[in-house]
Image 1 (cartoon, rainbow, N blue to C red):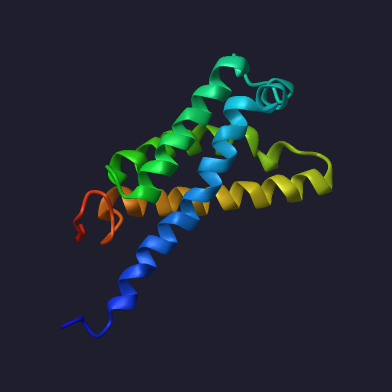
Image 2: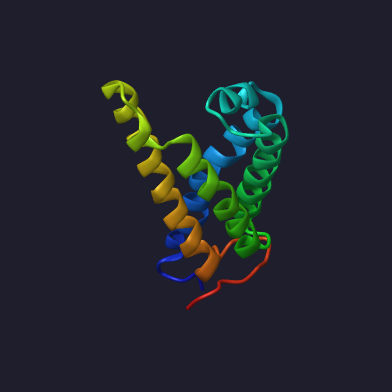
Amino acid sequence: MAEKHEPMKLLPLIGRILFSFIFILSGFGHLFGQGADYAANAGIPMAPVLVPVGGLLAVLGGLSIALGYKPRIGAWLLVIFLLPVTFSMHAFWAQTDPMMKQMHMAMFMKNIALLGTALVIARLGTGPLSLDGRAVTA
């Protein structure tokens, strides 16, 4: 007999897929796009090397969480990606143009929220319906 609240098991799956989209899509952009030029113009040293490495961290972490395979490791990959990117690329406090300051503040806050979610996943895992095949609880 099916559990009464069976559809609720889908919520963690849907949530982690939605969370992962930004990392998978932007990560491929970092790997194959113009992100290195943007980072170099922002003063990031070794941008042609660091941006693709960041893209790889984002893609692997995003896929890990979306699929529920070793999600705690994937979450830490995203933390490693997010920390330097957030503070180096979205330093809104250093902007003088009001529009750029507002844009970077929004991006900074978005990344802080993503960082918080990655830390929760690093602690709790991704829940049921994952390749790891188990729900991890506190």
